[in-house]
Length: 324
Image 1: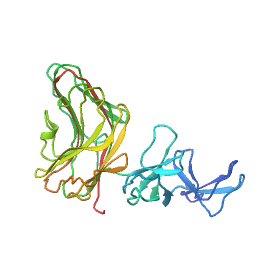
Image 2 (image 1 turned 90 degrees about the vertical axis):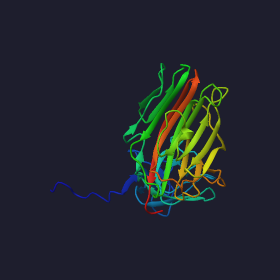
Image 3 (image 1 turned 30 degrees about the horizontal axis):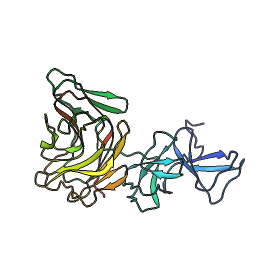
Image 4 (image 1 turned 90 degrees about the horizontal axis):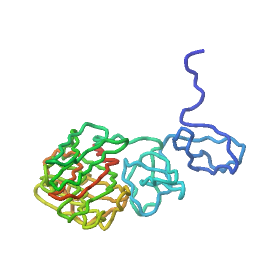
C-alpha cells in the first residue's frame, strides 16, 4: 500500500446522529473546534448517518441590528443560533469563519467562508512595534501578556506617556478596514486634561500629546473626575481637515472589553463602528488629504498628576485590500 490512501473527501465528515436528531443545515462544533453544518434537505433521526460539511460559502441568520464588514471574523452565538461579529466571553460561542460580503444592520443573513481565517496586513500584537516610555521618576509600563498588550501609568505626579507604534505601515492610497478590541480597566481619576487614551491609525507618535499628531484617526477616551470615564469618542485629522473628538453615544464600562472598527475604503467619508453598530454616520471623518503612510498606534498620556491608568489592547489589526 502507498503512503497515503484517500479515505473520503476531507471537507465532509460522516457521523452517527445522536439522541435528539439533526435538522438540515444545523450548525455544530466539531471535537477539534471547527464549525460544521448538516448537509441534506431533511432532518435526521438518532442512529442515522449524517454528512457534516466544514468548508465552503454558507449563508446563516445574522444577529439583528449588527453590522458585519467583509473579511471580519464571525462567531456562532449558541444562545440565539445566529452568526455574530461579537464573541461573548461566556456562553460557548465558537468560530465560524470570515464574512464574504458586507452584511449591514438591516440584513437578516450573512455569508461566511466557513473555517477560514483573515490575514491581517498589519497586526500590532503579531508584528514588530516600537515604544518609548516618557517619565521622570515614575514607572509607566508596557507589558506583553498572552493575547494582549497592557499600558499602565504609575501614581507618580509627573507627565507620563506609554505607546505602541507598529513598524509596518500602509500607504494612504490602499483601502483598508481596521479592527480593534480594547479593555480600559482604569481611565484615571483626574480631570479630563490629565489622561488621554488614543487608539487607531496615525502617521507617527508623539512624546506628550496624541492630538498633536498630524495625521490620524482615533478612538479617544478622556480621563474622568471619578474612576472610569464612559464616553467613547472618535476623531480624525488629515493635516487639512480636523474632526474633533466626538461622542459616539456609545459608552464603555471599566474592565469590560469593547470593539471598534474603522472602515477606510472611502477616505473622504470614513465610517466607524462600535460594538458592530455604525456610529456617527453623518460625521465626516476623513484622511483623503493625508500623505501617510499609516501605522497602528496605541497612545496613552497624562500630565503632571498622580493618577493611575490601565489600558489593554486585545486586538489591533489592519486588513488592506486591492479588491473592495
